[in-house]
Image (cartoon, chains in turn brown, yellow, blue, orange):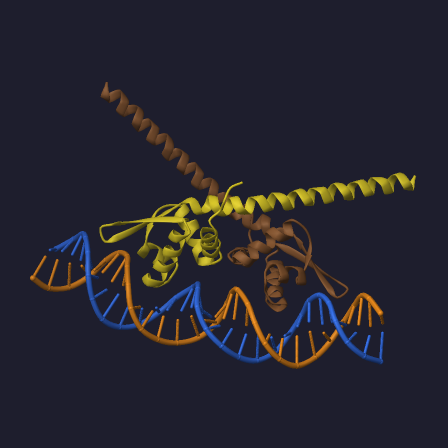
Length: 117
Length: 117
DNA sequence: GCCATACTGAACCCGATGGTTCACTATTCC
DNA sequence: GGAATAGTGAACCATCGGGTTCAGTATGGC
C-alpha cells in the first residue's frame, strides 16, 4: 500500500485546476521557457506568471533553475506520478463497475430474447 | 486527438484538490451513503457536506439520486476518465524523459569505466 | 559606470470557496 | 394530524486565489 502525501496531492490537483497552469504545463511539455517567455505567451504580468510557476513547482509539476538573470522553467516532476497514481485507482474501480454493469445489461437482454421466443 | 472539455477538467481537478472531497470519494468507493451518513463521518453540517457532494457531482465524480426523503450518493462518473486521461499523457511523457535520462547516465558511467581501464 | 533586462517581493483588490446558522419543505412514522 | 427526520436554500463570514501595480535587486552588454 503506497502512502501519498496529502499536501502534495492537494497542491498538484489545485495547481491543475487552473486552465492557465494546465496551459503552462502543455507549453513546457514542448520545451523550456523563461518567465518572460511564458508571460508573453499567456499575456500576463511577470509577477502574475511567476506565481503560477511557483505553484506548479511546489506541486512537483515543473522545475526551475536560475541561470544568470533568467529563470529557466522545465516540464516534469514527481507531482504527475502522485496525482496519476491516486486517480488511476479510482478510474479503474469505476471502469470495473461500469464493465460489470454492461455485462449485467447484456445478460438481461439475452434473457429477454429467450423469453420472447 | 481527443478533445477535453476545459470546464469539466477544471471542475474535476478543483473538486479533487480538497482533502475532504477526496475523502468522500474514498468513502463512496466502499459503498453508497446518504448526505446524513457522510455529514456524520466527516463531522460537518448537512448543508456544508451537501455542497461538497454537489461539487463532486458537477465534476462527474459522484452521482446522486433522491429516494424518499434521502439522497443516495454513489461513487463514479466520467470525471475520473477525463482527469486521468489528461494526467496520464503527461505522466508518460515525464516517465519517458526520466528513463532517457537514466539511460544516458548509464552510458556515461559505462564510458567512464572503459576510460578507467 | 551606466542603462536595459529579468526577475522578485510586498501590498492591494476583488471574486471564489469552505464553512456556518437559520428558516423552510418534503417524507416517514405513530 | 402531528412530531421527528432528511435535505435544501439563502445569507453571512473569513480565508484563499488570481490578478494587478510599484518599488527594488541582480545580471548582462556597451
